[in-house]
Length: 229
Image 1: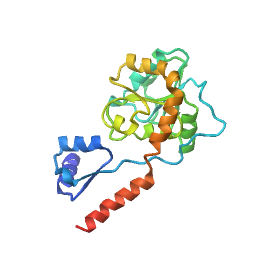
Image 2: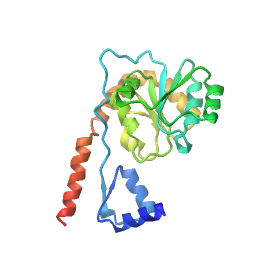
Image 3: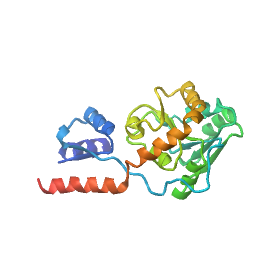
Image 4: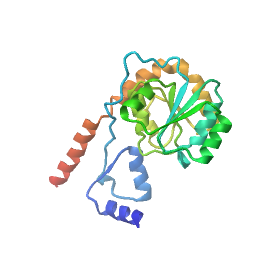
C-alpha cells in the first residue's frame, strides 16, 4: 500500500524533487514520469561539522563507520576490511545497538579493536571525524550519502564505493573503489596516508558545494515555479 501511494503521488505531482541525479535516474527506472517534472536539489550539510583547532588525526588509527548496518550498507565487509590492516581500529556510530551476530563477527575479525559509540550528537560526531584515520562508507547504494559530506567538511578522508550517488556527491575528493570487496577496501586503507593531505583539501572544496541554505533557496524556487504556472 505504501509503495502504491508513493507511486500514485509521484505520477500525479506537478513537479518532483530528487536529492541527486542518480535518484532522478532511479525514479525514471522504477516510476517513469515526464523528465520535465523532475528537479534535482542536493541535500546540504550541517555547519556543525568543521575542523577543530588543536586536533590532529595524522597519527590516528580509528576508522569510522556511520549509520545503519544491515544489507547493502556492507557493515560486515567494513569489519573484515579493517581487520586486514594491523593497528587500525573500528569506531561504530549509530545504527542501533550491536546485535548478537554483529558482535560475534566483530569478535572473530577485530577482537579488542572495535568500539560501538552509539548515537552521537553533531558535536560528538564532528570530534569523531576530526580524530579519525578515515570514514569507511562501504554502502552499495545511497540516494545521497550525507556522512560523506559531513566527514569531508570536518577534514576526515573518505573511502567509499563508486556506485549510485556516491561519485556525484564525493567527486574526486574521496578514494572510490570500483567494487565493494575486502581486497579493494584494504588496498584503499593502506594507500590512504599517501593521499591524506590531498583528500582533506579536496574534501573541504567539495563539501563547500553543499549547504542547507542553498538547498532551501533552490526548494523555494521550485515552489515559486509552481505558483507561477
